[in-house]
Image (cartoon, rainbow, N blue to C red; front, side, top):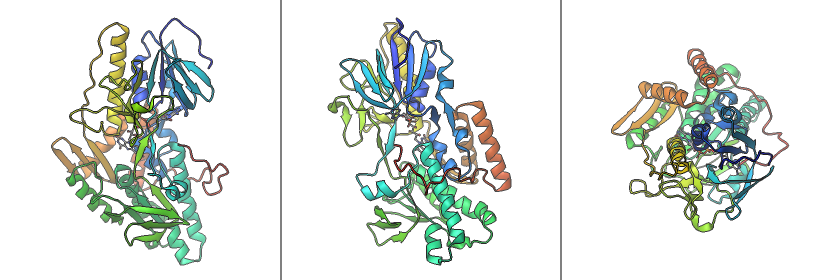
Length: 431
Ligand SMILES: Cc1cc2nc3c(=O)[nH]c(=O)nc-3n(C[C@H](O)[C@H](O)[C@H](O)COP(=O)(O)OP(=O)(O)OC[C@H]3O[C@@H](n4cnc5c(N)ncnc54)[C@H](O)[C@@H]3O)c2cc1C
């Protein structure tokens, strides 16, 4: 890989997600040669992916060029590369654009969609873990609407207008709410000749309530909000198959839909080369100590979704959300600086800032410690926090503008089929 040789220790970060970016930003001015590798040349703000899928935001508003983040330092480099493997013995990382050696390596590769080995779902379901996938979903939904408006077969039209989501965690709930808002406020004006009573949204959840990681209060409120928006919620139900547009479950629920979205789980996205004992097999994530060092390695660290730090408070590791990733990235920067100065590292402590989910216009639920609330105020907080954590003034400004425009006009700006999903030539899905 074309990176100049210097006498500085080289720190290689794999992954420019929340964790990798938090670390990189803090190491830019340090006496290290910093190299960030990512398969995309941008950072993705995943919590707003569903707004790209539901045509509320353009993809550019939730992405930020990784080069812009690293360009601020003298000894910092970004390379767009798919990391293939690591060799801890020779301290080398192999990528599709060549090899690179490291003195310190940080793995921040996050997670990917987990299909739990179900092949029909993996082959046929839509997923939403990155921007290309979010755009695929946007295209498919809009293409189905275009087909629905010209079909004369009523059953076929209903199949095209039926949307199903498996998994009612924050992603499934937010996406179901977003599609319901489209149905209520936007689509009837776009397709005045279509009867939107035919459009159905089904949210299917294996547990006994939606938003299982949040409080019961949040779950009850979100259920009410979604039902008010006309979403059909099916609890204690697991999707077993999705083939030829037919959703089958472990109950008697079964129906045909042209849009089936899998939001029922994630698994780590490890890189090969780290010894098997350091990987937790059921989770595909690296076991790390309180300094984020991977079990058995002094100079290889893992942060964010890919790491599991078992503590008394979090025996199964921290939740796979943005805050632990950001906090671990920042903390590791402090520890690396300490280490470079010959000082001892300090253990990571997670500060839980709470969790939230939005269900649509004026509707969100928030759990912050003992405080659990929902409605307009929660929605306002949700918007403020998401704007705050978006990277880049331009992205914040455009997102705020779009949200205000949507709010005032009951409209969504980005209902565009820029590239067809149905007629795509590349059928390989990006992980
Ligand atoms: C749809 C969705 C909604 C979410 N909503 C919320 C929310 O509302 N609140 C919240 O707190 N969290 C939310 N999350 C979770 C949150 O986004 C993740 O916990 C967070 O992104 C984890 O950060 P990370 O840095 O560990 O990984 P990521 O942000 O996933 O970054 C990993 C990076 O590594 C790169 N990469 C991976 N493998 C390779 C490889 N082999 N070679 C090169 N590059 C590689 C990827 O391209 C990516 O840029 C959501 C996630 C999704 C998918």
